[in-house]
Each structure stands twice: as structure tokens, then as C-alpha cells.
Length: 238
Image (cartoon, helix red, strand yellow):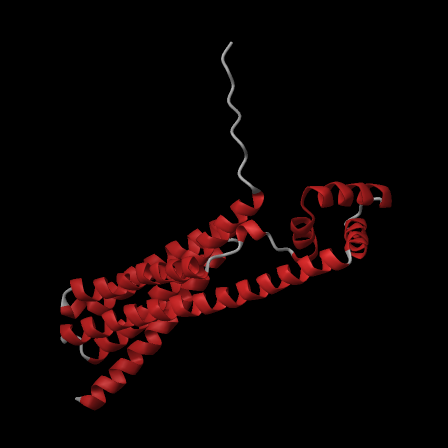
């Protein structure tokens, strides 16, 4: 008789974190595509034959945007993590100085979830005996100490996601013939945005058509605005 191996199911929280991370990556790539495409299209409209200017603007946009995303994400996650650490320390102190009151609070929270007083008391008792701090953090504050986000990891992921999206319009503008640069960049960017819209909708379970339309229209408007600005400024410079 063959021996069956049990493969543990992935933790629901881990799956949620993975999906949130993927959504954040898609949004970061989307930001990179739109912001850099606008910059590249504007410079190309002003000086369509100046490959050096387009390359300089594109590279500067990619690097500054990636660094900005990384710094912003690092600061944001660090602030969140500091707040969570302060709440954990506060909860530890309360459990040490007033365990009975904290237990009663936990029972009340379970009752508020729909459990009977007897069941709520039993659940609170068993979970407190197993891991009092972890239980209070999850139920009271929604904090899982095993899944605190790393600021450096978040910063690196944001920078990579932005960079991955931002290089597309730059490459499109540089590799296309000078007289086709704007048209090729528009086409590449809109296709890439459609893909990010599709991916984000699939990950989030949202309507796909609406998500694609939203990002494509937003990207098109951004490029049209910078195209017009580049034409006007390029005309004046000339």
C-alpha cells in the first residue's frame, strides 16, 4: 500500500501577503511605465532627433523614480513597523501587569465575533495558554509578529518593480526610428499598461475590462499632456 505524504496547506496570511506583494509590484511597474513614458514622450516631442537628450531624460527618469519609490516605501514601512513594535511592547506590558483584564477583553472580543460566552471563554483560555501575546496581537490589533514587513525588502521590491516598468518606454523610444519614436512608444506603453491592468485585476478579483480601460486611459492622457507640452516648448526653443 503506497505511503501517502501530507503536504501542508499554505498559511492564509502568507497567501494574502504574497498577493498583496504581487499587486504592489504590478502597481509599481505601472507607475514606472506611466511616469517615464510621459517624460520620454515630452522630450521626444520637443527634440525627436536628439537621441542623447532622450536617453539622458529616460535614464534620469528611471533612476530617480526607482530611488524615489524605494525611499518612499522604506520610510512608509519603517513607520508602520515602528508603530507595530510600540503596540507589541504596550501589549506585553498590559499582559504582565493586568492579565485578568486582558483575558476578559479577549473573551469579549470573541463574543463580539459571535461565539457564546462559554465557547469564547474556552477559546480564549486555550489560546492564551498556547500563546497569550500572539493571540492578543492578532485578535485585538491584527498584528502577526511572524509576518512583519521588512523595510529594506519593501524598498528593494518597489525599486525593482518601478525599474522594470520604466525601462520599457525608454527602450521603445531609443530603438525605434526617429520619425516613429512617439508612435512606437505610445503603442508599447499602452500594451504594457493593458497587461498590468489585466494582471492587477486577476490578482484582485476585479472586473478585467474596467481595470484595463482605467490604466490605459490614464497612461494615454499622461502621454498626450506631455506630448503637447513638449511640442509647445520645443517650438518655442526653435
